[in-house]
Length: 215
Image (cartoon, rainbow, N blue to C red; front, side, top):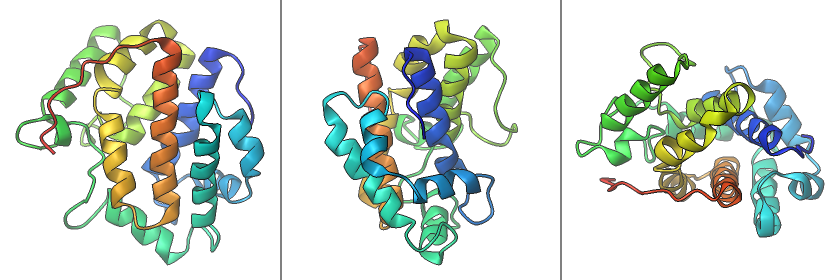
């Protein structure tokens, strides 16, 4: 992990660094290099360079330390793999589902109103989907990846995207994820992502109107 000094580059870095851990099974996914880099991380140095940490460097360091601790036995260890599947895949009840509409839609369903609003916004501004049609656009990993893409390719859209689509629900979800996580890697990931988004909101001076949460 390297320092990102320019504001837009910092957003690209943050989104691209966090998204793979939400999207990829540690054993069968495509993020082996990201997991390996995290397992070998110099935690103090990374925390000092982490974008949007502000006055929360100590908290960021704690989150990174938890993530590294969680990978001490390897990313393909059963404890890490089964925790990912419990939190993000199933089968069965997910304690903290990773889709925005589950929290903001009255029926607590995927492909709810907030998903459709995000889809309509993407269509209106000419942004292509990052996944297949079966995957809701408001998956936290996809939305972090989209944040990185927008910062790199369409920076004029970043504030609208954050204010109207990502920051409306992600902090609420990430608190639920941290509480639900039983393995330090994913508890640390939730905390690091929440701290990063909070710092990004502060840095860009965004006021976010929160919806009613139904979960």
